[in-house]
Amino acid sequence: MTNRYLYLFLLLFCLPGVASGASDELLARLKNDKKCSKCDLQYTDWQGADLVGAEVSGSFFYKCKMNGVKLSGGKLVWSNLELAELVEADLSKADLTGADMRQTDLTRANLSQAYLYGANLAGSKAVGADFSQAFLKGVNLTAADLRDSNLKGANLERAVLTHALLGGAIWTDGRTCAAGSKGSCQ
Image 1 (cartoon, helix red, strand yellow):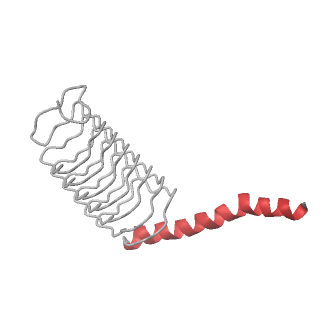
Image 2 (tube, rainbow, N blue to C red):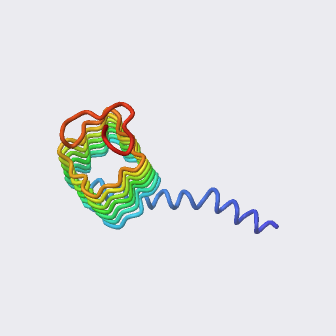
């Protein structure tokens, strides 16, 4: 029995510190080098960090707190940003090809001119986000909350908008969607 309790103690109290130290090291490298491909940065907090032009393709950002982060011009190809917080983040001109952004909070985020070909934003919250001139071809926006967002000039070819909330959004042609718009701009 004693060994069992010792094992449980080590598992609960000691190992998270080791994992945290490893992610702190990766985070420091990312901030310094702006390069960390295929890195596991899940659950990390780097709100407001300046990572303009960072190369983080294939990285794992599950449940990261990235509010206000500056990733404009960054490469996040095939990265996992599921359940991440990106409130007021700058992802303008970023390459998010194939990114998994399910249930990500993109409230008031700047994704203008971003390249999101084939990305999955199902269930994401992007209220007031700027997607102007973004390449959203083949993007999954199922049940995404896009109210009051800016989609002017965005390429939505083959995008899936099933159950997406679009009330108050500025549509690709510049018109404003009616308050109850869901799945298409009314």
